[in-house]
Length: 271
Image 1: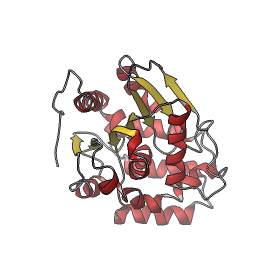
Image 2: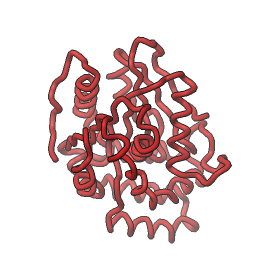
Image 3: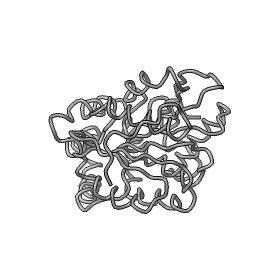
Image 4: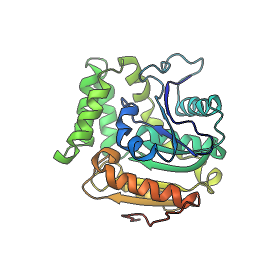
């Protein structure tokens, strides 16, 4: 069973599931938890290989995005949550895509921050470079290098430092377990158009997420019930770079799609 932190368990309230990025933890969502916990029950899950969750090598089948997604759904089963709102960042959003493909009936709404839908030439080059270096370089050096490439600007410093700091507690085999899956990210998009057309989806990306923004804009054009918000002066980790704008868009989106009283328009929308 994946480790999780539960903030509130009032059965009359909706549940929000938080899924972090590679090397991260529930702590990257502290500003979202603060903004949401008075109105929702929150379940912040640590993905396989993170904190006290099972190792990526502990499963009796090859580790995959689908295995991780099923583990997340097991947490919902454990807590008797039939359906929930999902919020993810980076890798967490990739896992949400996998859940939308295989178990869309468990998702009320999906907020996908900094999601990766395909690998660009630049990211493929980095992946190849990483494969060449991973056996001779400490994994935290590799992680730090990628963090600086993905989040290069001064205004990305807080999010960049947060992820590097969190990743220092991640074991090498866990990092490599996830790293080896990156080449299969595209497969998590399979089935979303057919199986999750009725699920409201909000994609939030940073204007400065130079590695993945273009591919995302192209990939979601033909998805039903999908909206895109681009936050100015924000990079890959949008919930840390622009927490107030991120939170405002999340709250408005969830309330709008659950019949809430405050159905404000999204703050910065562009397709």
